[in-house]
Amino acid sequence: MSAELITIEAGSMEQVSEQGSEQLVELINISLPAGSQLHINGVEMLALLFIVLATLMALYRLVFGPSNPDRIVSADALTVIATAIICIMAALFQSILYLDVALIYGVLSFAGVLALARAIEHGRAEQSDKGEHS
Amino acid sequence: MRLIADLFLLTGAMFIFLGALGLIRMPDVYNRIQAGTKAVTLGAMGILTGIGFMYPQWWYKLVVIMGFILLTSPVSSSAIARAFYIAGVKRWHSSNDATQKNKNTSKAQEKTALQKETS
Image 1 (tube, rainbow over the protein chains, first blue to last red):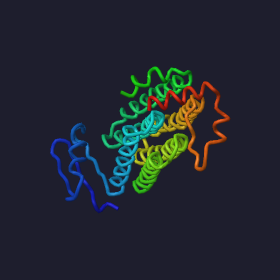
Image 2: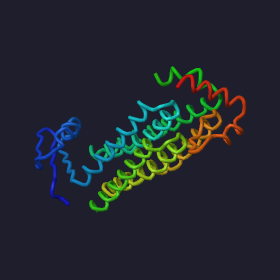
Image 3: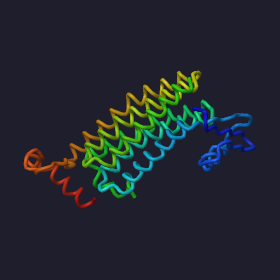
């Protein structure tokens, strides 16, 4: 299980495994607190890859959706995916503060989706369609 | 403990991936709501459970976030589906849509025509 361990220290970046994931290491190394270490094995890297692919597919439906309801549905799915991604960032950065960010993001996205649904339901969608999705 | 966390994380990521795949492959808006809500919600539950196994001292905030996602995600998708149904978004039908035209009111037909123009 721990065949591919990647050791990251803040300040001096050291990478044990030789293949892949340099960009992820650079991405993580930006805001690690000093003295903290991070271990990512292969299973977690596979999970991160699946989540990245899912986000790209949902973004494809958001950008190239054939109609506006498809875009709204994919935005609703993307809020849940973004909440999970913020929790993964909390696990990667080893800071509990990101869980507060995830909770507040969930509250605000729920309010936004409900307001959007209510706006469609009461028939104001055709006036503000071009303004929302531009 | 790390093995259980990795198992939950991989399961959650798989469910999120399959939900997004259904978001692309499904033929209709309502089918996409089903795929994009239930599978992605279960995947988020798995990922949060995995993080809870990885960091057991964070369990209270993770339980709050899990409960909030479990409460709000079906409500928001139900509100979206109800709004689409009221606004008259067409359903996908394999053979014909003869039965669908009888159910729409005149106002919904106007909205459907407006959405055809805008989209």
